[in-house]
Length: 305
Image (cartoon, rainbow, N blue to C red; front, side):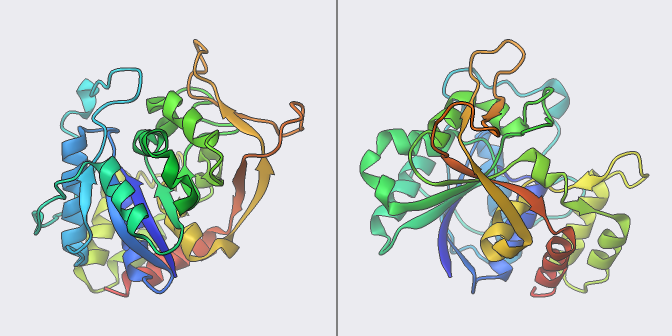
């Protein structure tokens, strides 16, 4: 079993990550959750995490929100996202517990200090909180076994051409994390495009007779367009899926960095695929995903509730 700290921005995709983790506690044990600013204010994202945990029956896990804005650029909530909660289309209970009194960064630091062995930090949102943790607490670097994150893109992008959303929110933070010296496993946007959910999969979710599965189906029905114009993918649960069953992935070690200055490429993940820099690899990039195993894991995990 792997003890983890989850830094996330729930979101329907993060709901699936939480669901996977809490259905597979023999493989993954969430000790603390910090939430980060992304598509909504950090307070609303924290509330989403607490709603999800209440539905999943795990109000014992401490939740704290971290930084309210990226390291350099101000955070502006897009006008067309102001009514977007991230958990739309499904009925969630109100939070059944109070958030931690600590900040997200200090909750992570406390959890690491108290751990008997190095822990994994899993990130499924912008990486601002973890960058701040690494900068503020260098004495805790040795307490981090590795960082597994969803972020960056090699050949694609979903915010700008060549720029993935999480890294685009805070490129400076992403640069700090990948150059921290802590081992990093990256689930890039290229990889998550292989995590396809079909209308048939949603129907199988709906056929599972419990409230969690019904919420999962409702979320996917709301956020997915299954008309065939483009595949419906889940970008965040792969982080937890990797920790549960890494055999469904394959990857390659590369030297990587993050562009912070480019007018068109700010937030772009630079990958030395042909070893042109002569620099030693600092990240393992997952490149392939067995989608059948991924979907089977989601469906089997839903039956656990």
